[in-house]
Length: 89
Image (cartoon, rainbow, N blue to C red):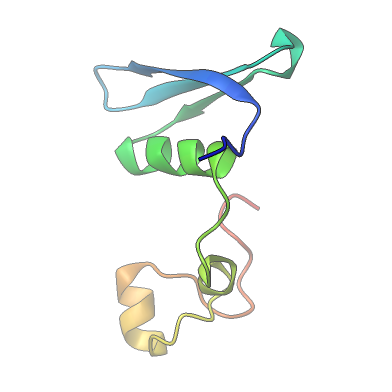
């Protein structure tokens, strides 16, 4: 199976407060390395997936609030709502 990203390795620093630093090393040009700080394990996994794989089918729709969950349970679970600004915007 062919690799679908330009990185040769990923290093993760785990910090005592539960945050992480994720560093993707570009395969041929270190000026194209990507390094980011994330608050928790979920953020670490999201960072890795965002930089090394294609989104799963329907993921963009779910992020836009098109997840099929009714408004009250979606809000209680912290799911995005239709028309709401994306997280981090």
